[in-house]
Length: 135
Image (tube, rainbow, N blue to C red; front, side, top):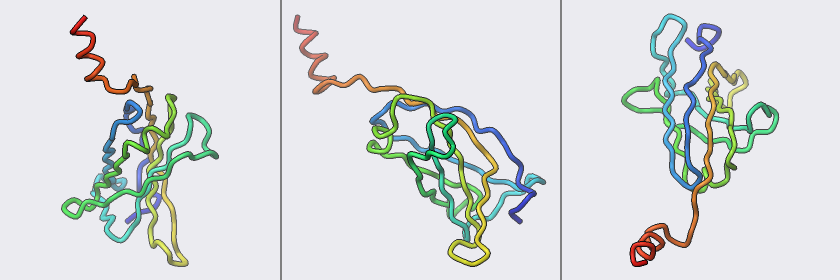
């Protein structure tokens, strides 16, 4: 059962460099520690600049694992991480129960931080390294 039995929790901080890909995995349990079956639910993760909860800059849909329906995976692409500037973000996974139905409900029971670092860009790191080695 989803509802008030889901415990609020803090997610561990994670770090990423702009332009890299990132996979975030979330596990959902009820208040008694039993895995939740999310196969009939939708899952999203919202990202906002740290402390700016009314200004989400990215919302990604999660994929519920077919083998472990209490696990949701969210993949951030290169384009997603480039768009996130080099600052700290809050992340909040959101479970939508009964999506597109009159009794649709959203549950947010966890939050954590994502720290984005700027990438060191050049035309090609490998080409620059080879030139340096020739000097």
